[in-house]
Figure 1 (cartoon, rainbow, N blue to C red):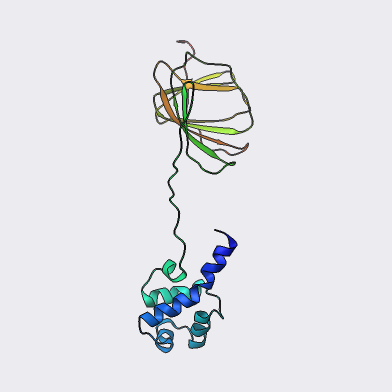
Figure 2 (spheres, one colour; figure 1 turned 90 degrees about the horizontal axis):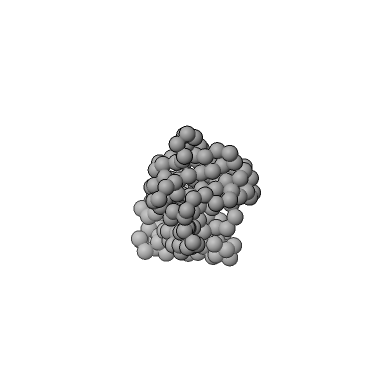
Length: 196
């Protein structure tokens, strides 16, 4: 919301309060008695000579038996749902779950088997993975870790890493990627070395 929009909302509070009081046939004196706010303060509030504060609006909302946002004419909140467009690349489908650029980014990933690990990569940042279904293989420097549904891992992406399906079935996971230093929690079991 812009500064202009905020100013308009605040400027409309007084006339809205007056209209609501008059529609209900309530006098300033009666409203003053119900709210404990002086008649002169109510009059200045309705005429725009006094700025609306929470301390004034709460008893007015209670006296008129209306929600506070109706008194101030708060703008409707936009649709909070993220309507993401899946991005498909080779054996990976990524669905962005955050709308804002920069900061922490969230993705739902579906990875199809692609013939085993590729070259490990490094880059700035910190990543957190949570397996929704299937099995995920994570190569992290010299470690080889397998995560199953319900398990999570986190790591500094400056370490060489690669992750993908462990086996012949797809894996579905959530990935949170953030700037260096943003951390979550870890829970994963190292994969046994003997049976590869």
